[in-house]
Length: 452
Image (cartoon, rainbow, N blue to C red; front, side):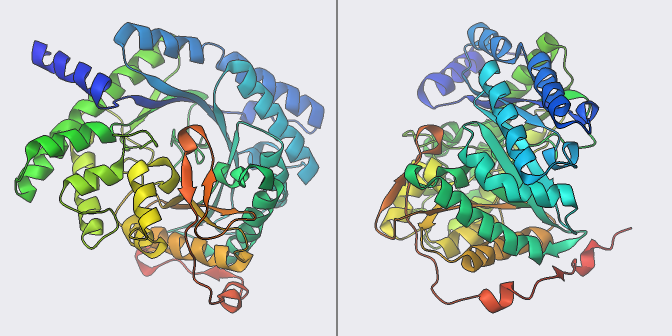
């Protein structure tokens, strides 16, 4: 039963501790739009998206007014476009990206995800052509997000795709060089990509999903940080229990919004993603949570252990609060989107190596990290390969969203704006890994993948 104390506590979370629904994302299947006529394909996709999601933004605004809970982003994810437009040329895929962008703008959503390809074992022509189109597509659109799955625990790592994505990231950086290479902020490379993730840039509508679905991503780093601060000098068992309890309450808010949005839109409810998603705003930082546990600065020794406990407690508390949990579900550590991470990176305490270690125990990967613009493509591929291998070996989702900021180097910073924030340029290792990357082929799946 809900009591007065629970209501007041929720109000305090919203007003003082930055509790919000980070995103309500409508997934839309485009399989019924497939056509061998490019113009007809474009029209059917535009019509399907704008018809299915016509009330998404207005319903979310109604829910904000009804419950007083901010819904920061309204988004759409679609069937991987490489499957829907399998017969298109790279130029055809760029045109299709512009159609997606136009539909997103018409509906008033901030991002549309699914300009994606799944190439963990190899690339068919459609996937290959879409990947070729990514740099131009992201440079010539505002709201389109792209993802490429280059590995899975079952398939191993497609190193040809890893090499290619290093080159694609560089090209994205060049084509958006007048905007601090922001095109790279809309591109993520995955291992074990989830098919129901509501968060960008990696959201897509998986092939096993219904025709349309509502997925909700909750947030609340500020709420967790405040709860830990109030818990004071307690032991780890008490600290974990504190995080579990607050994660339950945060997720119940997400469950409420997901159920109501589903009912009002006449669209099935999919999942709630439990992730703690930070912003550059003060008091809304995952780094602050870790520092409230007793770390002087995020990135110092003990950070990985603190993040592991946080991630586990969030999952344990959140999973009890929702009928269906999915997506990524844990703690995000995007450098440019988290003020505490930004400060720690600027001090040199939080490094690329430490971030890689932290990703072994959290939900995503190397996220929104600005690196020198002259970083070689094979070095970027090496960064991708290292991170992707953590996901493959540990049977978890990992991803890479690095931004080689054209014309800038260590000691400078990049400004992306809005929720994407800003970031200091972080150093990378200067020694080459080109001979390793150029071997090509596929790194075999780990032995524990044989579970049939």
